[in-house]
Length: 173
Image (tube, rainbow, N blue to C red; front, side, top):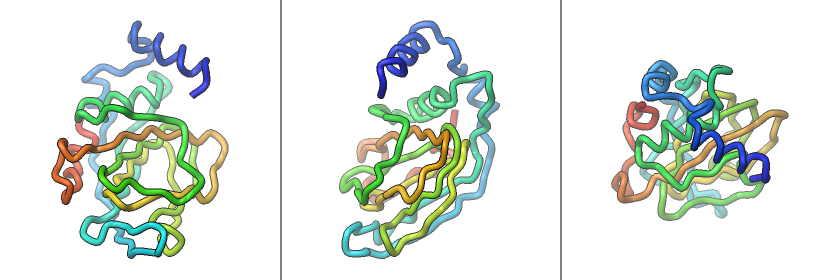
């Protein structure tokens, strides 16, 4: 994160500027059907044999009234998903062996391959939410201008290690 982003984030947290209230978050969340995918071990990324990768198309409405990254930070934080980071997906294959991950697309759009080389390339855009079960991994395929993501680990203490959170709990305000 750059110096300006860091300063901006601190100012927003202290002043509440561009940060949504609980009511604003409630209004921003829309019910959406999950798109579930299962990926097999591709030799590099083991992928989760029991749990699906889940993509929600547009469950979060982002407006100019609030900082989009702050919307996702607040939504994820209300679920206890702290230690979040923003502004990118690694451009190499990786995975988390002990935690699930929730990913909110705060801006722009990108084509991202999930599940390793034998996985699936998906177009993500602002307002989308992705849940990766532990052992699934997202190498970036192509980034587009303006792409910004907000990610948070879902610790085993928040859910059992063999269950992905329910759809509504992922984005519940």
